[in-house]
Length: 196
Image (tube, rainbow, N blue to C red; front, side, top):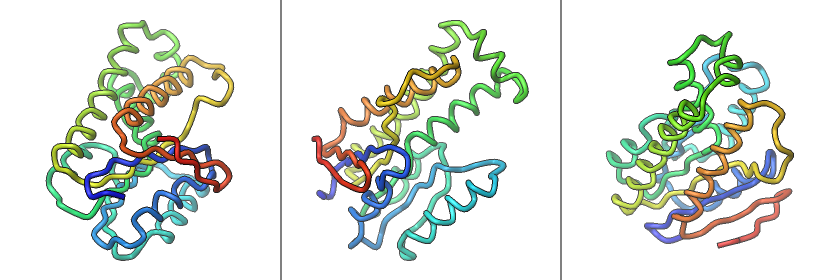
């Protein structure tokens, strides 16, 4: 992987995408692992999932557990590379942060069900702008970066408006990253296919 490359790794749940992404930096010591799975009230299953990811990472890497202002992390540090795992969780966290500025947790479903196209466009704009900042910072600083994301376009159309909005956001951001990426990999059942 080149020093300034942007690499995008897609796959389904438990496909092996994170392990593959980590292997791309296996010889690097100065890596910042950006863990976007910041869960406010993690349950036992989520805590176990996070612990497994932490144990698998190189002890020499720096870990940043955050999903906001990733562009500032890239702009303020000069390392061998950045591994952002994952885009889907980053989008999800930004989505709910924004929605909770408009309603209370118990009314999220009702708010989104009644949301107008203008309100949905506002959510979309906030999330896409965050990703523009991340991709611009990576390009401007000439930093190697690997971004991991879930491929969400192979399943059925979600039943609720909330999950359809999220699915569409995931897909749109995935397309944005794939267009900018130098290399794109798709991981299925631990098997890696280079698609760009």
